[in-house]
Image (cartoon, rainbow over all chains, first blue to last red; front, side):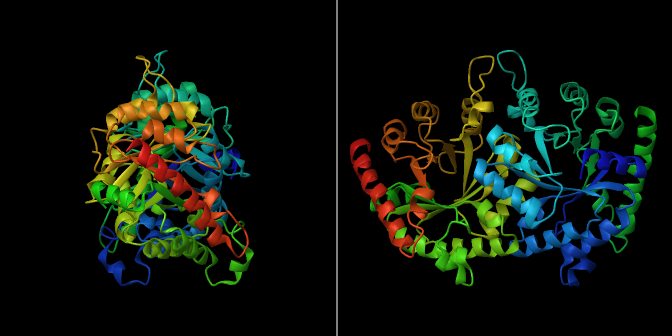
Length: 271
Length: 271
């Protein structure tokens, strides 16, 4: 998917919502456990009920990988199920030396058909670039994450007082462009989103941390929105586990719609 | 596996060789392609012929993942095949927020039975710690990698002139101990291995980059060996692709033995 196609989805749906698919066998409604593939049934119903409001889905690969080969089959089926015009994110946090990164890229972009993959920057340019060589596919590079541990390394200032995440933003903009490179920018650090936006004015940000992790949607929009929106704000648990009963998919729909309505207001205000 | 069990393996075999399993369907001998699971047959024969000389095997997860669910089945079978007394490394370079890292840990330590997993440090302590909570299981944390891109971030000095990889070594020693935490230290930076050894005197290092990537085994031993050896030196392509013919496993055996003989000399010299 191209950047302009993504922006046109955002305008059509008046939403920049990404629904995170973190299907935990211990958390999904128990009535699904009698299905042949409970995780698939769960994701299927969530997708059906939220597709009107979401411009992206982000399966968290760990939740599938924990189930072994069967989990990978489920993941492939879930990816196929997502409507063509909705952006898909493999939240996999991969990254390795060149020839290995290329294989990870093939796994997610060719064996499966994801639009994008999250990538960790620690190993540097030649570990990220192989992911950027696929037509209309995207890298979403970790810049500033939403967890407490992000302070351990990402905020360390160099000799010129530039924190590591800023160096990641700076160097990586030479590897990719706003047409194939996004950044993960956590919502729990409201004031810092503005700093990231200054350093990367055109790029899309994938913003986790709204909802369960405590980030504020209006702060994210205020500091982070650009002229093509430039934001995909993710909510996982707040939507998919809104109810643990038979009405879980309808409850998920309601939560997704709530966020979409809030997003409509923010798009009108800032775009 | 415990550290003392690993060291006793090293002493018994007079070797600190790790064989990297990077089974590429386009590189394995063509006569294997008629087998039901060519990748499995390839790994099986390599393991059979090299197990006398290897103290560790390191499947590179990308090579299996690129084949989808079928690749994961193969990976599980390969892991089961490796003799109990040989250390197993899932070279996966994972790392995510806490509850997600825990699931990755389960995937490799419980769904499969790997002894260790390689982990990327960028997201900080709470992304690494969940892997350290499993009895007799290991994190192998990226510190200084062997690729050119390692210079992009790992070597950046902070305000006190301490490069990032040193901060990773320093902080992570508070999360784990030499009993459950190793480091990836690339062999292509001979002089730097001594620096890493000073910062982490007791920990084991997993050293890639010997052979195809140009690192020198004697330099690694000179700068990196400690009183319990403290080294697992990996060779992948140099061993597993020593021949592309029907004799590939015997050729792999020969290359593994060559390294083991060199290692015996180095253990006698430095231990």
